[in-house]
Length: 528
Image (cartoon, rainbow, N blue to C red):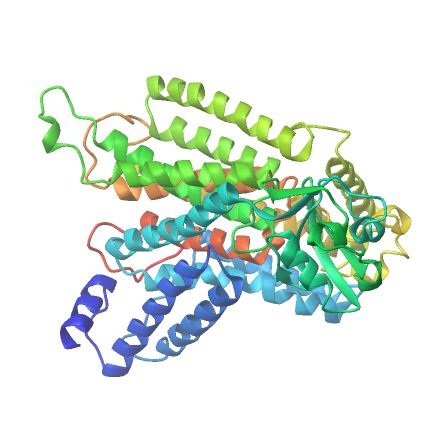
């Protein structure tokens, strides 16, 4: 046990000190790794690990030797963004609702938890690897699940079928009855016969349908298909992948961020391994698992395609473009375009087959809904000087949507504004958007400066890079941020706590690389 603890201390960069300090730092580091492992899968596990580890780290701050907390430009805008969100919440049309939403706004504290508990670059590289490897678990499950298929897709549905009477259509695929999965007609018939009224969940094109089915409508017959009233069935493969989150947009946004990190490492590792003409190859190629990173990037890209989420797919393309521009030579940039264009075409084909819409399709109902919400958001923001400055308050539309004539006067389902900038303007006012853009701008500038110090931008093919993993993390974090901003124009990804947590984790990792060198223990500034 003692040897294990000594190895952990060396790996995590935990210095000698009082027993309570050492144990607090050990525990905080362990919960940090648990948080990273859980982040691609479960918000409950991720938040539990973060809150526990954060509490331990805060307790540690009261003991000597003191942790040096220095503040720079990024810290000021991070805290300014939270402070303005708090002011907006107090001045909200529904202060109680908006103040409760500050729990999501406080997720930025993850940046500090990550930054101060990754004390050396060895721990940073391990943290990045945990995030990528953990994400590949749900990617593998997603691919296998799609290959096997799920549910009961009904064909030859009779008009007197209990499914048809409940509102289901030909080719709909039932996958749950009363929250219990069904995989064949016998399972379906048995589940429907257990209660007087059953809650049936089914897939239809790119969305989920929920209907109530009366047991009294079950037909007479000797087989399950006769009783339910359809001629044939099969497993469906036409649903939007959602990983373990249960929602495709959340999964797509997280995939974009982690895939960008993996792609940055892959590009940096590959070009670090290119040898100068006067040096043998084995002296300059880093010990990197190219195949593992390549499989990770490819797997996440496939899973992202299976989410059929256009904005996140575009975000990853923009991210990849930024990574290759900064980290690759011109020849390889051209090759990236040659690979990327067919990938886009494949994605468009999958989109068309699954959702029966184009990439930019004004006739798509989801596009029309977004346009309606954007108009509502801008209208709300500009209706009074008060709203221009502090907005209407987070989630206040839940109680005032009728008064404000939103959602097509109630004809459309209640939702959010489907755009991070518009959501911030409508709910928290112009200063909140300025703070948010400042956070992104200062962070990206930090990443650029870190890349410049490693000479990657000026000479991306300059041969061996002893710090290729640092370069890869910087490239991946920068690309992920660009992709996050891009998809955020049509997604409120900042408001999705699962996504925001992963994004803040990557900010912490990126800043750590910017602020430290090999073998250094970090105890300095966040933003500089």
